[in-house]
Image 1 (spheres, each protein chain N blue to C red):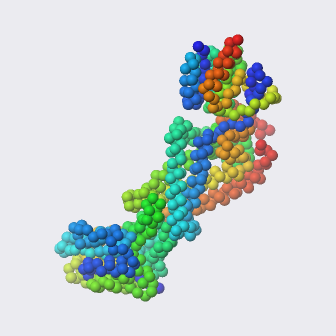
Image 2: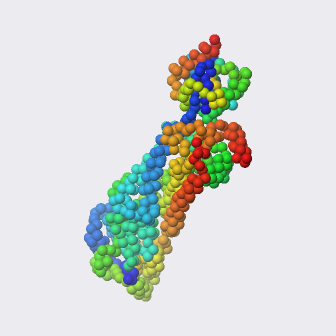
Image 3: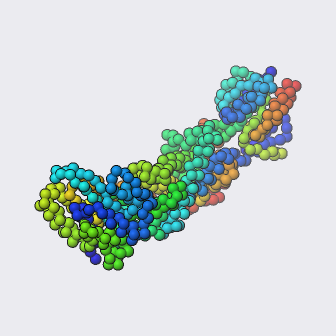
Length: 128
Length: 267
Length: 238
């Protein structure tokens, strides 16, 4: 089944998310920092990335997104953000305010069912 | 007015322990609490000072250069000239009276127990009501502060049948004690000495001893605990100064900051 | 700060960043309450001018309050350690001083007294002053516990000579930690630049603007934070 890269430095979340995904048959790789994630991505080419934004510094995940967007080999990998950072949905924004772009935004805490559903959905969409 | 003192001539004491009884009777102390009589292999009873035993006769068997002796020591608060307990008492329950005795006001005591921990003679005893909450009261010989300040003698002095106890002007007591020591030496008590003249600011309780102080269990060189001076004269004032300086510094910093930082600059 | 959702006309706006976990905040406020009670009731035995409060039945009651508060004061961090051991240890590590903290110390007069923002090097989740406060709090907690427990239960058990030293160290820890608390209180509540701090400790979140300004290293990461600081310093010279 598909390879999923889980990027998060919270061992609690990583362990439970990994178990949920592996039970469903996914192959799970993990990275605890933006740098590690880039190295793994370049080697393994995951089908999907689950990304926490706040790691060793607040914007670390967003900076990873920017790196990925600038790298032709990585920019097409779908990313679902699963973060404890609090975001509110807004309808419009000035281009100058936009820091990064992502395929989906999930707020922690996220239930196993919700996680699996969003992962499945995203893989289906991207495969098409 | 002149400093008062008690002269205890241990060479005259016959250990009748009338003083123990008189003290309990006058100060309304219990007879049996802490000191239920039991055969401990000695006539000595109670085995220690307690919140209900402010004085007691301590028995020691002593083999000295002059032969075998029973040493009888009437224990109790020494009423130091430099009382550490007064210095450390946070409530002022322990005070040094102008006439030298260390007085105690039970209503003011909050049971902290510092007096017991800092006394160089380990005299005050804490009457603990509740060990968990710390509710307690301190307890010690007061030289019968209520009798003495009304022209009477302490109860123990009044009752002693051997006339081993005297109480009055301290200089007189010292002179009397020294004379007695000379007389004892002349009679062959080569180790006779007067204890309490100069230690810890001069003790209010003077002993004519017929053996060295250590033989009685008295400290040969008792000292006002150095930590009391460190605590009361250094740590306390410095602590007040440090906290006061911090408050002043903060006030100063606040006004400086207000002047220099305009709120429009701050989001 | 905005994140765009690809393929949808939706944007995510980030305004508030979680900075203090619930546990951190609970521990902090319990500590505040118990420390205040302990300091006040303890100082009654320390300062002669507070003597009337220490006397008689009132004194006995205040001593009781001191002990009850002491139990809670002692237990709360231990409960944190038991419930979240990993976070607890990570938290302690955050307070350990590093060489670069000297930069903060040097910048104190210019920043806190004069308001010169460019003088302050980029700070992490805890700025060096907050680290100092945390470290002093932890060390004081240890000293209070190690001296206080024998002072409570050890009378007649430990030698009086040892007890006397315990009192001295208990008092020294009080002087240092109360002074630190006063500074902490001032900076958290009254200083014009530190407006985000109290909001933070109450709700657990800080605004993006406050973090970008005051905790650049934690917000932008060490590299970017340095770049921003260099730019700010160059700007202020002109």
